[in-house]
Amino acid sequence: MRTLFIAALITVATLANAQPGTAAEWVANASVPMPTEYNLGARDIVEITVFGETSLSGRFVINDEATLRLPELGVIDVGNRTKDQLAAHLEERLRDGFLIRPQVTVQVVEHRSQRVDVTGAVEQPGEYYLQGQTSLLQLLSRAGGIENDKSIGEVRVRRQDGTELVVNYTDLASSATGDMYLQAGDVVLVPEGQQVFVGGEVKLPGALLFAESLTVTQALTRVGGPSEFARLRGAYILRDGERIVINFKRILDGRDANIVMRPGDQMYLRKSVF
Image 1 (cartoon, rainbow, N blue to C red):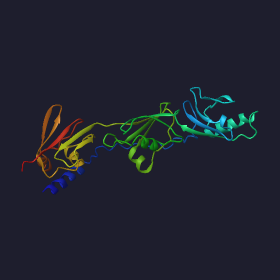
Image 2: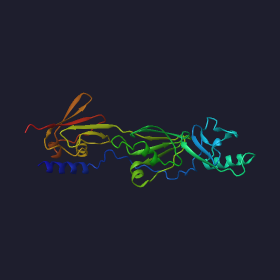
Image 3: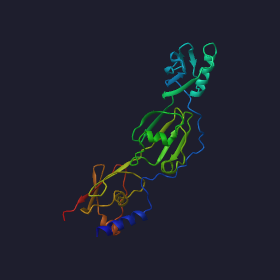
Image 4: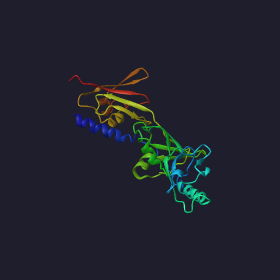
């Protein structure tokens, strides 16, 4: 009997043609240009090595004016150079009266200049720093991934020029459709949706992402259906201090109308006494 009820419940949910928690079709912007190699900037920490010259080598912090002060050479303008460009510039400076054939390497020890903010339905929102060419997927991974029970299924990237790019997260995660390289100053927003809660004698109690026209039968299907001890005539919704009684048997028989849920609703199935 319980198996027949669950089958009927799934049928009702399917016929209702609703997919709670699934975002609308979002157009992914795949025309975002790929950035060049990482440009050094203020607060980056670099390791400079001059072959055979330990007094000229060391670890340095690029200051807020995007310059470095190096032994013998004094102030060096980093000027948004890449690490290889900075190494070539230092070799040129050292050839001018210091060394005959200088060999310089520059490595980035800590990336601190190109900040991106991540907010919304991710595990670890906060400030992140680009580490070379960093894609949207890579940054979301660093942020612990998306909280699927809260996300409405889209990711928004807001640029400093006011541009906003919208990507479907399912497409992004499954096939990298809409993935893009991020830029300093970007804000990555994973919008959170409204929720309902289903508890009591159900298989997977918990919060669900609300969607327009979400019915009680659809919500029950999404939590795995009723447990074997559930009392199907004694369910109820708590809504703004009011208790709304649900009789799932009458709904499936067509004698009661399916009830549409609202954001913040809490639905419970009681335990049968038999």
